[in-house]
Length: 318
Image (cartoon, rainbow, N blue to C red; front, side):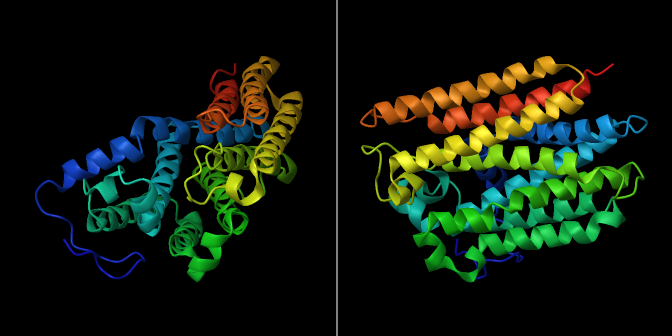
């Protein structure tokens, strides 16, 4: 099937028989809904924790949790589909086993799925008219990132510029979800103190940045020409950059726990995740010739442990 020429949110024809099966296989391989759904719920839980701690008379509801978590999940999926399409040539060269280059799903399938995901996201966003304009702006930002911000060649040559232009999507998404939570609870946008809100958003942004850098770090034996931070900056600088981001995230988490936590014991999973990641950084720097790096997995586990700690502190609060 020939894919449409447009790379924006268009209206490509949905593939006939087998479309759902192909998309299910794609999601299983590239975007496991159970894993990303759990992450979306945890991120929402962190933002709800902040709101509940500052505004104890205002509590989360099941409908709010579903709306916010599904909004996060849909936007993450939309970004995954955008990345899949814009990186199709790189993946064909370096990851031919993935669903799109291997032919298990077509580009038209992914484009049509992207339309459906965008419609679903805007449908959920319409439940909160107060934040609908912000949702549209956030989706437009995601579309622009999917088009390399019209700077394809420049961004493909510079991982740092890619990080600087794509990274702000994370705090923009978190700000939107926080505004959505306040709107659902019928609270003014100024109800939260700005510094703690910035701290929670900053902590999550740093954790995601750590994971983003770590997943694009390779040992010398793994480098294949695919754009990585280790190839662009050198392995030591890339690893130390990820470790610096992880350390800053831990410092922010410690400050939040000291000031707002119901149970300071939640510092333990945060510390455990950090030490796990730091140990993997040390192993990689001491043995750069090792066959494979597990840095990306360690960074994801750090993100999950820290997010789960704050969410659980809110969920199990008295």
